[in-house]
Every structure is written in structure tokens, then in C-alpha cells.
Image (cartoon, rainbow, N blue to C red; front, top):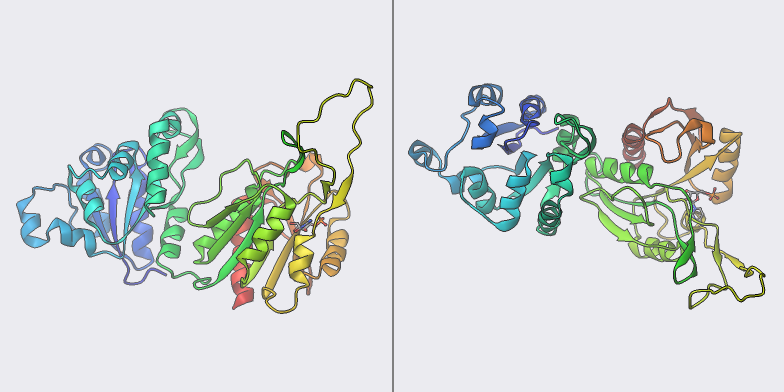
Length: 398
Ligand code: C5P
């Protein structure tokens, strides 16, 4: 998948540096050539010998190493790659990148390169959450730096939360996608995700419990296969993945407009939990108790069915239209009927009975309904469901 690609890998000084060794192996397995650069701090975690042995290349360490300058100057080194990857990207390295510092070999290469840069952040959760790091992170994203991770989970420092470096297979997949080698290269896929908020008045709204986790995972999986992803999301509780075109909306009507604006697409996946109804008589000012003890009467109007609208459009219909169905009983039967009613190609159905813990949880057990029938998948992490679904979409688009 990465045959003949050249990757300049900058290894920062964090505990996750040990994963960089495995990353080198996996990248080389895929046919990539890895030129490693080890920061001073990185050397405290992994040795230059193990890095260069795994890369089967010299490891670059010092800006003022004259031999290096004779063999290959730092400018050339920064450009003789298809992609620059920083893993682990520590808080310090991210700060240097965001500020444009060039006071060691790694930061100088990052400032001098004319190639795309991907970072895999890794740090303690407090350091990640710190406003300074978040500021630097936002700056790097604005500068076009690609990001993979960080994930959430137990950390070597004993704390738990975001800041854990992405796992090696995810970094390899993101590199593959960035180098445009995935099966969805050149395809545009639209994904809706999250809940919608339907206002009652300027401060109150009707919502639902969708976290947006499955939609976000799906957008990331499609991106990893090389697709350009338009990610149209209601107010979700999980962040949108990096490297996708995010359109943030609140109401179903706004989501419908954003979907129409994002078309045409090769495929469209409707993972959002859209409110069926909006408040027709939403108040322009905050509603007050009127002293009579009588509750206000809300009137409802039907929201557009975005999935059905796109599935049933003539010209410009995406080749593959996929809906989701959350059911609490007779999952396959209800979802099969929904597929016919909406006119979509596939329905991804799941059982959201409270005892399954699926709604808002980390796992999903889905039944895929296609024209060929129903296929039940085992219970899997949402990221794995997303990966399998993205591969099926790639297959269907051919
Ligand atoms: O009819 P129901 O809400 O169960 O259908 C669920 C599917 O339809 C999901 O894919 C959801 O994203 C989509 N949908 C939509 N617009 C609506 C309601 C549902 O796109 N107004």
C-alpha cells in the first residue's frame, strides 16, 4: 500500500516513543522507506541504535552534525520525503511547530519542509487539555497539519483521558490515506452525524441522546481509505475527526440545507439522529410562566426526511445511499421495511434497547440490510464497525 513512499519520521521525547519502533516496522512492511529523526528527548526513551536498525537507515539527531551536512543538508532532508510524520508529537514539539521555532534538527526540518506534515499527539491528559496546547493544536490544524489521534484511555502516567498516542495501525492507515493510496481515493462521501437541536425558544431546545460516536468513527474510516469526506454534524458530544470537511449545524432544517449544499457525492451515509419534529411555534423571546399555572402548548411541524429526500432524488443521486435504523425490537424486519420506505440502498440497523448499552457506548452490534438480505455482524468496537462499513462502501463504489 505504501510501496516506494518516503516518510521522514520525527520521534519526539515521550513515553509513546516505543510505539514509533513498531510504526517503523509496519511502514516498512507496507513498502515505505523510513528516514528517522530522533530528538534529544526522544533518545531518553528509545536508543538511536534500535531506531536505525529497524529503519535500516542512519538516524539523524543533530542539526550541527557536519557529516550530515556533507551527506545531506537539513533542507534537503526535510524535502526528500513524501510525508513528514511526527510520532509521538509531544506538547513541546507541538508548541515549537505552532510558534515556528527552529532550534534543533526536528523543529528546523519541520519549518523548512515543503511537504505535508502529520502529527500523532501524545502527552499527559492535563498537558493535552491545557489552553496553551489547545491553542497550539488549533494553530497547527489551521496551518494544514494533519492529525491522527490522540485517543482516550489509560496512560503510562496512571491517568485516564485524551492524550494517548493513536495506535500504530491507525497511524499507518492515516498515512496511507494522506498519501492518497486508499480505495476511496478521488471519491467524495457525505456523512451526517450526531443529534439535532430543535429550538423551543432562544434558550431551550428538544434534543436526543445521540453522541455522534458512530458517525465520527465512520467519517474517520472513510477518510483513512482516501475519501474526501463532508461531515455534517449536529451538536455531538464527541469531537469531529481531523482531516474531514466539517459543517456544524443545529437543526434538522439546517442539516438538510447543508446536505443539499455538499452534494454531489459518490456515497452518502446518514448516521445522524434527526428529530422528526420541530417546534412550529418556537418563541422569539424566552418563554415566561404566565401566572395562570397553564403549561404552554407547543405545536409541532414535521422535519424534512433528509435520507428519504436524497435516496429518492433523480438526477444527482449519490450512487450509494446508506441509512441507519435504531430499533428496540424486530430489528431486521423493521429495518428491511425502512429500507424500502426510504428508498435507500442499505440500512445499518442496531438494537438500542437500554440493556445493550449501545446508545452512547463504545461498541455496536449491527445488522446490515442490503438488496441481498440481512447480515448480522458480531458486537464490535464502533471504530471497527466503521472500518468494515467503509470497506464495504469502497467495494460497492468499485
Ligand atoms: O425514520 P427514522 O428516523 O427511523 O430513520 C432513520 C434514518 O433516517 C437515519 O439514517 C437518519 O439519519 C435518517 N433521517 C433523516 N432525516 C430525518 C429523519 C431520519 O435523514 N428527518
